[in-house]
Image 1: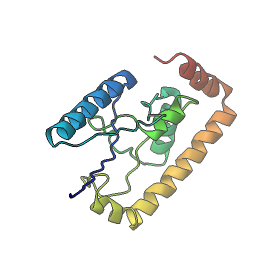
Image 2: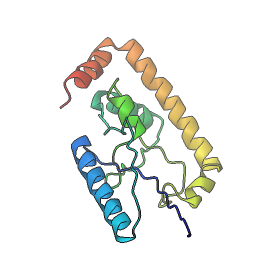
Image 3: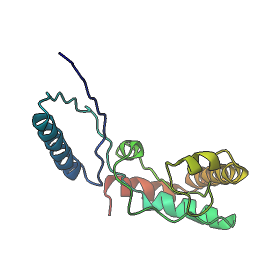
Length: 161
């Protein structure tokens, strides 16, 4: 008798947690159907803590973008068609958070690809990260120097638009 084992690890991500749980149930139903069709057993283990959607903070993001502009840096275009839940989303549920995009690879380089991996070790990536770090420091100084900005960020976190 030949015994085989097949294993799969997957994450289901979505912009809203309710929809993510619905998708997870559907993916699990597909796996159950495949297991039944092939005469196998299915054992599923769910993550106890899913990645949560990003809770953006416009007050912080506006300050960051203003600091980028003051240095002549353009923010990379937001990726709106591929963002779902993420580990930064979990952070954003606890405290005001931003996720601006800074160019570290040539335009058009697909993220999470070998080309992107290679680009991350190139001079453009180093330059992008140094500029992002400087912009973050400037934004931190803004928060320390401008209590009204800090209050706007806090208010927005408690009562998002």
